[in-house]
Amino acid sequence: MSEGYAPVKGKCTWWRERPLEDDLFQRRINEDERRWACSCFVEGDYWTFPLKELPSDCPRNRHCRYYIRHL
Image 1 (cartoon, rainbow, N blue to C red):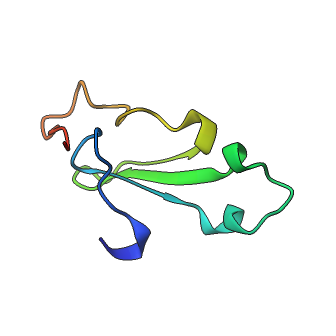
Image 2 (tube, rainbow, N blue to C red):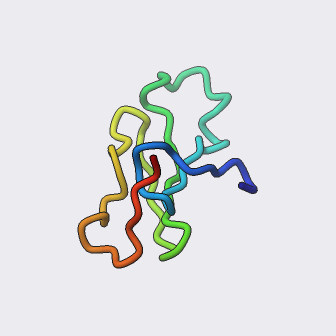
């Protein structure tokens, strides 16, 4: 997948996540506080979460008509 996004096993097939470049080389930010960009590849939704709060699946997985779990 381009731009560092890739499907994540155990999450929605359309869910993508990658670390935010702004946080990658910040030494004053703890590893678990670094932000991750998350998006739904199909719906175009976009979120940012600190690593320690990264959801176990797409926040809208129960309401998405395109939801397919990636095994």
